[in-house]
Amino acid sequence: MLSSISGIHRHIRDTFNALLSKIFRKKPDIKLGLYGPVNAGKTTLANRICLDWIGEELGKASVIPHETREIQVKEKVTMKHNGKSLNFNLVDTPGIATKIDFEDFLKYGMKRKESKQRAKEATKGVIESIKWLDKMDLVLVVIDSTQDPINQVNITLLGNLDARKTPVIIVGNKIDLKKSNLKRVREAFPQYEVIGISAKNDKNMKELYAKLFKML
Image 1 (spheres, rainbow, N blue to C red):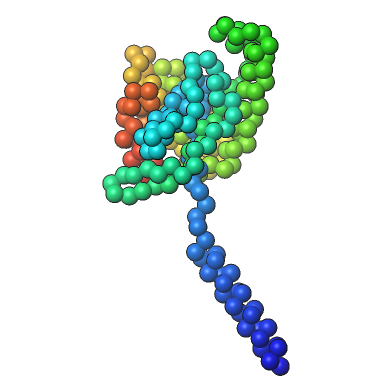
Image 2 (cartoon, rainbow, N blue to C red):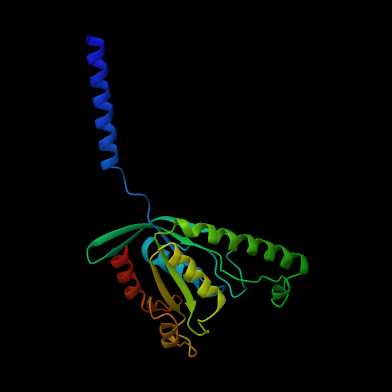
C-alpha cells in the first residue's frame, strides 16, 4: 500500500516538474536572416550590425560575386534601443542566384580551375540558403537600390517567405550612390516595409534598428 502511494507521489512530482519546465523553458534563439541577390551588400550589412553591437565583423565582403558561399552565423548579438535589449543570432547567407556560370569569374582574373570551384561552392551555398529559410524568425531582404528590383530572385525569394509567413523587411541598400532609387523599390513592393540604408557608410542604420525592435 505504501509502495503504491509512493509511486503516485513520484508521478505527481514528475508531472509537476515537467509542467514547470515547459512553462519556464527559455525561448529559442531568435534568428535574423540576411537574404537577397548576389552583391546586394548582405555581408557589408552583417558586418555593420556586428561592428555596432559586438565590435567585430562577421565575414569578408568583395566586389567579386559569391564571396560568401557558406552560411555565416554570429550568435548572441545584443542590440539596445530606448533602454531595452534584444538578443538574436545573425545569419548571413550566400547570395541567391538563378544561374551561376564559372566563366563569369574569369572576368575578375580568376584561373579556370579556381572559377569552376567557386561556381560549385556558390551553387551549394544557394541551396543551403533556401534550406535555412524555415529557421528564420525575421528576414531582411537586402536589395541593391541602384538596380531594378523586379527580377526573378527577388520575386521568388519574397514568394517563399510569404508562403512560410515569415516577417520581412526590405532593405534598399547603397542609397549613398547616385543611381540609387528607393522610390522604385517601394513601388515594386508596396506591401512590405522598405527602409533605405547605406551599410557601407552607416546611413539610416538607427532607423533599421528601431524597426527590428518593433518587429522582433
